[in-house]
Length: 400
Image (cartoon, rainbow, N blue to C red):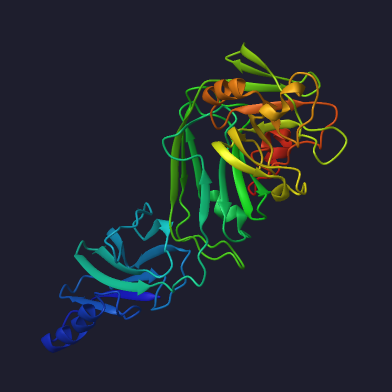
């Protein structure tokens, strides 16, 4: 710990004053952390004031708030500044005896602490100290959705996927702050992403209300992921808006798709879903439109179906990471509205696909029903959190 002592003595020779002031200049830079800082005031009525700063030292541990305490007096102001000139905001106690930063000290950063004090009889003094945190031995990064400035559908979750494992899930979740324009109720839930990485999603209790404005502030800088995960060394933020209430109802037994907007059916489209009785069946439950990918190459070998197909496909709309799409499938035209004969996707004519592609947006839910399917979409296979009850989803929070 760095200790800053403000001393008063009745008779102090000038030579002693000069000697005691010398360490202040030596400790005024974070380059010499942990050294004592001493000032002398000539008032015989003042008591000594000791100011302590933690963390301290040249390789201090990151991930803790900066704490400044005063003994024998009170703090009148504290500033904590990093090497880039950014200040850590903080709060002083009511009695002025302590100050704690709102954010944590981050890895590999030099900090300067300036503390102004006032003694019992009102003498004002100031002193300066510094410390440097040890660098991160491993850095954890985040991939997040949706992007800033986007307008998304009513089923879009906020989703964070981490490069490395997150063992300190409760500590990480505490740093994730959601604000909405209408106090939407929701919860974080931890899941395993289709890629095998740790992931946390925030979904509302029910579909979003159209027009809701949403902001995520992930104040993760200085947070430790836990063993094998590493440190977060930056914050993340995104802000987006909820668009119109559009629900895509897919009835695989009737072989049709209906686009329902604000409670009104806009159009019904004949489709063909996954072939019954095997691995080519479609998923059921609620899948969320993840992305509109346009014209892409689809190769059956990438989804474990051998060499069944390898072709360019137009108006492709991704529904799961495992490869279920809605798209144009003119080669299946004779089955639209009659039977399910695809390799798991929801196919339709070129004209219907072009119209439908222009209507939907990422975040729109596809509510899929059918007797012969592979099962319900898993929460980590795209955005399948809606297939859990609200109570079950809440149980996945690390703060429950």
